[in-house]
View 1 (cartoon, helix red, strand yellow):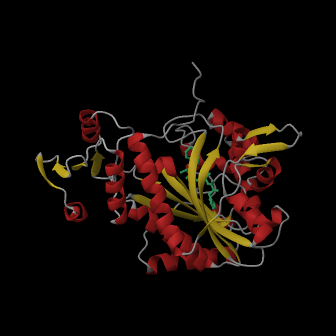
View 2 (tube, protein in one colour):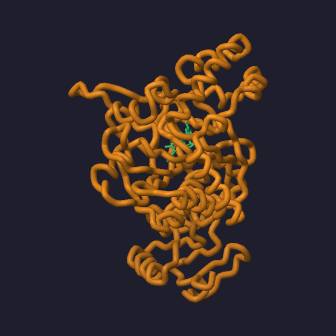
View 3 (cartoon, rainbow, N blue to C red):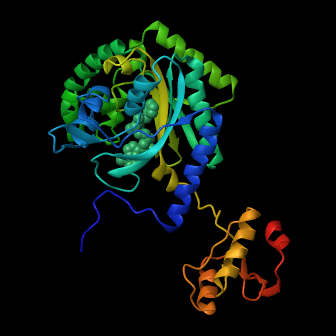
Length: 390
Ligand code: HAM
């Protein structure tokens, strides 16, 4: 038997319903409020992510699906969407400010477990160009609308990590502190010390927690302008009654961030989505000087959190006469009514059983011109109004 690749998924039945429900919500919330959908390639040159996410980040050092194509080019299966959208913006939209949405698979060589996959789906939004604190607020506010429409419970956690220079200074201090306490760190954090000191702050390992709790906090290293911008955002959130929790350890794992970082954390600590500002990303990639802010959601994580929504059709059409079935289908289509129909012209009893398996309320028998209500087993003469009303 050919096995399925570890860390990948087949999304089917109940999960498929949830997945499509979330995707529809994503587009109805974001694309109806000014974000235009962009689909960028799954394949990119390695250089894009090495420069954007950072040579020392965990994603680049350990998690990229990277290979040489037949022409000897170094390619990767994209681990995230922001860098590609920024590349797209510089190619086609450089001189304007634009809002983008994207939705699709990402690839990271992670240790597979529930809510952590090697191939997973992100839905993201970005505002790129000449942006301000109102743009930061919009990304957060529109995200809240999306999560609220999905009836999710979450906490908004925010932080400022200052300028890239501030972060360098802070990282040096943090390195000195962790170096002094190296013996008490977990093996995983010891490994991060030399290559990605900041990420030690994200550790959930119990061994690390007491040392992390006493570590210097980033706030003391942040320049005044960044602190003012952060203060303004907090005021706007408060004025708009948006609750938030400040988390000074929220540094996030991608090097391109400056100033604002934030995450939406589910009830059980599961991070449903995260993002922040990336004002220097275009410069780092040498493709312009525009700024950006955005967020991406883990669609499978949302799928594993929400309860199933039944938006399936309530009607099943059966019959043995192809022309009659087709004319009933046309009638229902004209009235905007969704329905199931048999995959082939099997015996009427088989079709009826199929209908029951789909848990529909009504079976339209096109041979007899009747509607059977499966909740009370009563059949009536066909009347389109009955289906319209339900
Ligand atoms: P990220 O935090 O790496 O940020 O990923 C965003 C979300 O994708 C996470 O919060 C999580 O829900 C989901 N996710 C990440 N890795 C996995 C995985 N292995 N399995 C399942 N879900 C996962 C970014 O990717 C940034 N590009 C976000 C951003 C947009 N920043 C600015 N704009």
